Image 1 (cartoon, one colour):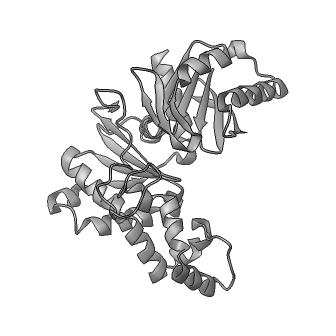
Image 2 (spheres, rainbow, N blue to C red):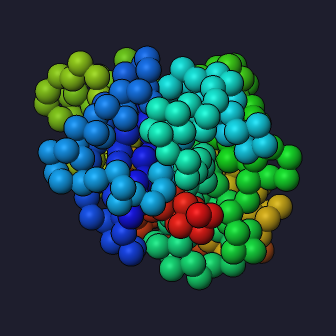
Length: 311
């Protein structure tokens, strides 16, 4: 049995998986201090209350929202966890009193999980973008997760300052990252601009303190022109990145995951529409863009397969 921990900014999704079957799944709050210590304490409580024993755990696998240097075994940065040059592997082995611990960037974990389980490991190559608080990005090339050849940083496609407005500051401290516009956070920021917020409230007949994507699902599904245009504009940086990377990599599939993907295939259609202006016709016509199949479970499945294959 493998304990898989998909760390997020506010909580950790944990799953016990054995023989490719989820035996149990639970959430643990992650305060901004002593994260691993608190995680261990809460997992201990869950184990005791539900009859699980540590001696039956073969490995622990972490999916982490940040850049992991696989050579130094340090989390270089994980902004949502307030980790900078944090020795997660060393600390986790001490705190959990466990040797077989594996770490994978969360976008790579989601990509690997979606490829292995959601796509049955069939595509020779694919890329995945997860739209959430930020934008995660992972690659499968020649049926292998691509981490890069230097330190293992090849998972930060949401950053780099190339595809969005130059004056827009990303949470990473760089200007122009597509994450600042195309993430769920970026889309909701646009929905809450005064004119857009007033329009949405008038259409729905009620006031909101803060508008979330879930609040405009009906308008989106009914093809409200203002809402659709907001999504087109916000997803433009992502669309440009997809077009560029497809021109460079020529992968079999592009997969879109994360919260906004719950809106369904219309999201992939909007990206396709945007691509017409920024992609060579031969690449555009052959491109396959799909919505992720595993949803929020992709990360824990990726962590599981990663540990299983590296034990």
